[in-house]
Image 1 (cartoon, protein in one colour):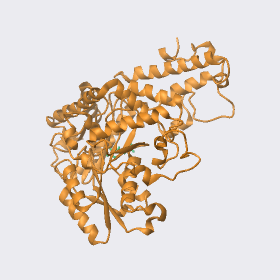
Image 2 (spheres, protein in one colour; image 1 turned 90 degrees about the vertical axis):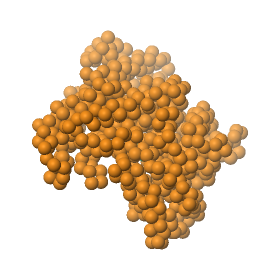
Image 3 (tube, helix red, strand yellow; image 1 turned 60 degrees about the vertical axis):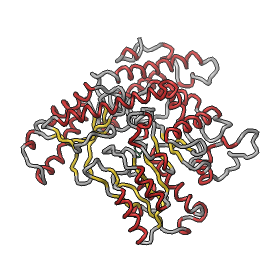
Image 4 (tube, protein in one colour; image 1 turned 45 degrees about the vertical axis):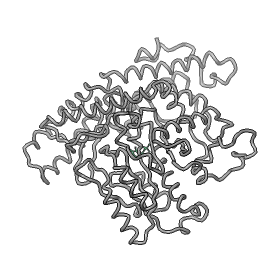
Length: 517
Ligand SMILES: *Cc1c(COP(=O)(O)O)cnc(C)c1O
């Protein structure tokens, strides 16, 4: 009778039609109207979710920016001076979802964060309803303690003892990485906090050429300078792992040039290839040279939940800090990212400014739970609750089987591609993470010998297929060039709704859209 059944808004609840937003709570006696409105919203969201999980539904209904700006079938982005009625708001909500991208669709392979976990969603709803801020215990007693519990659990999984470890939820892995550089710099040069960069030597930091660009961005933001981020060579035959010997010589040459090496970021699960840097070898080097070792496990951290796959992160316990995004491999709704720090109390020491209007030291409770001064923010969104609730719902075992399944899907795709002549794998070795990188060879290229001429043509193939794919909207996968490799597809699995039939579909779709290029 309502939007749930589908297409038309006419049959909507009479109560909605006769009301405007000023009739909703907190107006007295408005409970009924609010309930009806929210029920309609829930119906819209449920209808969306039911469609989302159906394979016959499109992943997206693509429109160019100018088309969306001009307005489509009664959906306009323009804001007006007059209030809209509730009915119109419901239509707007439905259309907003309609023209968006269904990132929870089992055939969405475009991003490292995907899927739609119903418990996680409920957690996000509750969080928004509570509408509070993470800075003090006085306004977030439950969430602050949950943060402690969840972070402790994650630090246990890194292998840190109870005497060590601290952490914080951050607005994304990029910000977690920024924190790691900030902390490392403060560790060696605490005076930088008050006196600034001119008081300290010229710093050098190290990360692999396949690391996430946020490491370089951190150097730009913190005044270290992107030129002083030295990109260490990777083993290109073996999925792009950092070469320890190259790190060693890179440190030596930085010292020769008068720079002060202080920080290494190893990547556990690179963004494109899904490679794991050799953490123990890198830890040895960091110990030898007295450097801060960060592990960017934004993407790969989830594998710690799996007994089968956690060996790939061996050595992570020796790190000084870790970035781990539950919103990627663990399927927690965006946004949910953490920074974990080995040295207890260090986040507080590095970042605190003791604003007296917020962090009064003479409060009547244990003010060490006023965690807000650990951060570089003031207000902070509650990101912990949805993860805590999902953990309750699944247990470690639930996360483990979900993650194992994603890696099995990757292996299935890899095995399929190995046996095809119309596809070419970027690496012959079995994927360590759920990234599978490959080229598609249309008929016209299949008989060309590998080399410059073929590469030039191959470079144009993925973008052409992607453009058609977006127009048709049945699936989504990303592509990119990397190093000396021309544009290739990167398939990633993080959605537990994805099945083998979806992997089959993806390849069929690429062939259908690209065979005559
Ligand atoms: C995704 C990713 C990041 C950035 O995380 P955001 O949450 O998108 O800011 C950092 N490092 C790696 C290795 C990543 O894959």
